[in-house]
Image (cartoon, rainbow, N blue to C red):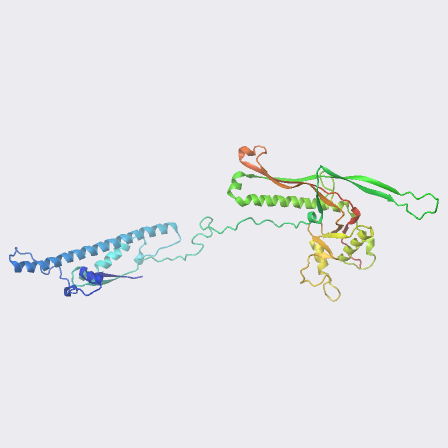
Length: 435
């Protein structure tokens, strides 16, 4: 790397500054320091004074030009010194950057010495300073700043945490979550007490028949029973510090959504498979009527056949029509992938965007029900009674949470599940055709 510096005498720079031709002596060589020296005794007379005056003017210009050049050299040396100091700081911060100096120099100094030697060894510059030339061109060699290491992402600290800030995507990526359907399948009604009592028919003996004149009429019999569906509480909580909630504004919403999901997950299981013991709900599958395998006969059947036979079982019980079907994703895939002898899909064109359904009835495909099981039901079979809607609360009123700056975050809900028509619910197992 080379630098080109041009030096001009005072008179030449005056001519260039005004960008116009100067006096004739503007381009004349500047006398050397030994020229026109006047060291004798004082002269008298007008002629001698006129002879001495030009020499004095030239001498003053020469001194002024030499002073300016020295000032320029001083400024350049000071700038190089500052550059050396800055470069030394960079070398300290980046240990893997090596500085190769010209002629074995370390790069932490010597730039000013090289420049000074270049100035002192230039004959053109000495001629300018001696007044024999108007300008000089200097070639300054490379100061020795050459980097061996390649600057890349690793060199500047990408692999070190905290050196380079990475882009933070807002929010939190949640774990995979189950699709919830059971609450949506049922009609939801409010509840105003700790339980739901309802009266249902248990036995009806129908004695209605054609009657002979004057004979006693047949007596029918009807028996009732009272059933109670208790309200059960589903809840969970999690502790957190007030500081972390203040410092991470999105964390509170993440916790809220996760706790609500946890509630719905457990409610889904209770609605479908709750065993009715203790504080558990009595689920639909527990109260449903078992599927009658005798409806399959001795022929060949597929999984879709079992669903249709279960719908038949509901219909033959004089219940209202089936309004929904629940099955596991594995079983639903088996039904969709079934082919006929020509290798065509029985369920239809796989490119269609229809919602999951079978025999015109919507299917809730969920992992809440075990693989290999199915449940079909009527919309009138049961409903969900809500005593307390899903509630999310924050409080410091727990143990010593107030003094420790902790908060408790809780989600809670209270529901009851009355099943009115167990015969309108059919719960069964997918079996393999014997053929």
